[in-house]
Length: 330
Image (cartoon, rainbow, N blue to C red; front, side, top):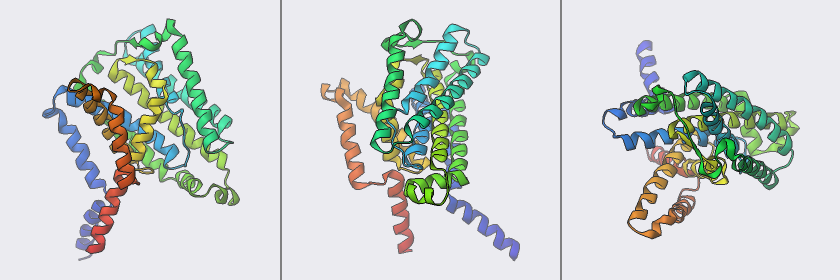
């Protein structure tokens, strides 16, 4: 009887934790290439890359309470490192891995520098400093036309294995899953708990004896490193990099994805990245129907306002609220 009771509790606990739903979703995504066309696979691959970027931003905003307008700097470093190194050398797997590792190392060092420089100030001042540093990176990429080709961007070849869109789709899916597991482990670690406490009441955490700056630096390094990896995968997927990857608009995309999906929920960042990517793709296509849709960001802004008004905690917040009401009725 005890064994039967244990066996019945395990599935219930699994369903309550949500892992069963996640496994089903991953399996569905793994089977998607069997029935989806090339455009859909390209869109999903883009969402996987932007999902990791949004999760990295959620570490700052959702788990630490830091608003940054310069997060695209790390995303751009990852993208440009791959593009420049492959262009200057050869499109081999070894050079791609070297470029990704170099971008990761540069992002970690730069995030430490940015953190020491700007984390001593708070709120608006921090946001403005990070935006200024990111704009500096944007200007450097724009002026170094002999390397980056400036605003026109640069195309490059990728290893033959990445030329197959289905193969790279699965690589990007694995990248998303591994990134999610890593960030989930991080946010549920003791350091992650301290970050949440800092978000709720930084002064109280400081009184308890924790070095707040130390933990904020950890958050910045983790977020910057993951953003760099997302940028590298994005560049490999697009096979093209321009200064747009360093623009404030790219940071705002991550900010919108995090808020729309649900701040402080890694699931929400992925959902938000999907909504932002799909909205941008299909609303821009409507420009062929009417020239008004050429300003599709206006319609997306209206969608954002509606979500903030009727679902202030994002999609994940609305789902949790619905489940709480359902359990309350039961």
